[in-house]
Length: 125
Image 1 (spheres, rainbow, N blue to C red):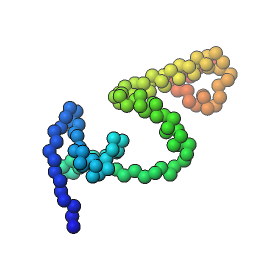
Image 2 (cartoon, rainbow, N blue to C red):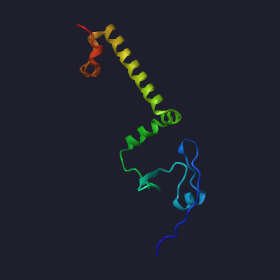
Image 3 (cartoon, rainbow, N blue to C red):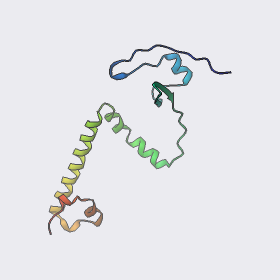
């Protein structure tokens, strides 16, 4: 026997956000951190909770993910452009530090460091 269809009317809020009715969230097991798949299908918007399974990956990868939790929390309120700008600024800072180090002690440059330095920052011999 097919499941009964339940329909509710919701209002689209600012920036297209909607609230999924509490009874739907309970029935589907949707919680605050649940991931939802949103699909546009022939003029209909379909939302389905994604089931997650216990990660079977490497413990060090899980540790690394947890290590970056504060960074993810900090970035949660930032726009994509703000995050990209912060990454660009950090890369430029590392490059400046690398060049400054090379100017002070060019003999300490390893092959790995030399391959990482962009051509525009290369020091003349």
